[in-house]
Image (tube, helix red, strand yellow):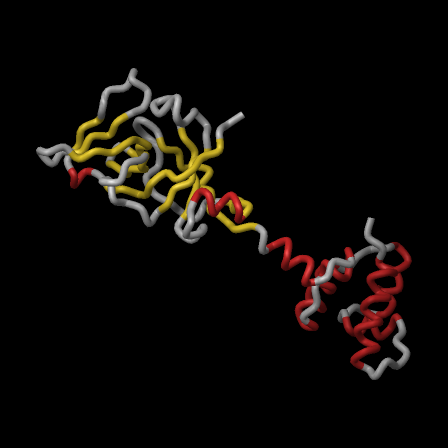
Length: 217
C-alpha cells in the first residue's frame, strides 16, 4: 500500500530546495500538483494517490517516480536496466511446415533477455534479433512445437549452415535451406517424416537465421 504522506514529504523536500529551503506546506504541494487545496486535503486524508498529477510533476522536475514511491535511485535503476536487452517477440507469427503469417507487423511484446545470454545467442547484440513461435513438429527433435526461436534478421545467406525462416506464398517455414546445383531451393525438415519442400528461388524470401531458442514446457 502506497503512503501518500511519505510521497508528500518528498515533494516538500524538492520544493524546499527550489525555494531556498524555506518552509513548505500542503497547500504548496497541492499547487505544485495543480490540485485544488480542498481536494488535495481530502485525498491526503483518504490516502488517495493522484498518480496522474504526480507523474506530470516528476516529468516536469525530471524526477524518478521510483524514488518517490520506492526510494530507488536512478543509478540503481540504470544498473539493473543495463543488465538486459530487449527483443521483439511476435506472438501471433508462427513458423511451420506450411501456413502461418508471413508479415512482421506491430503486434509484438518485448522480451527482456540477460545481456550475458544474448552475447551467447548473438555476439553482435540484440539489434537484429527478433522472436517468433514454432508451430508443428517438422523440426523435431531440434526444435519442439511451441518453442520460441530467436532470429537474426541480418543473416540471410543460406550458404551458411543452419536453420532459417523462409517466407513463401504458403506462409512461413522454419527449415534448413539448401540451394541445389540446378538452382532450386530445398527446405529440409529435421523430422524425417517430412519430405523436403522444393521451390524456385523467386518463391522464397529468407527472413533470417535461427540463432537460439527457448523450449516450451
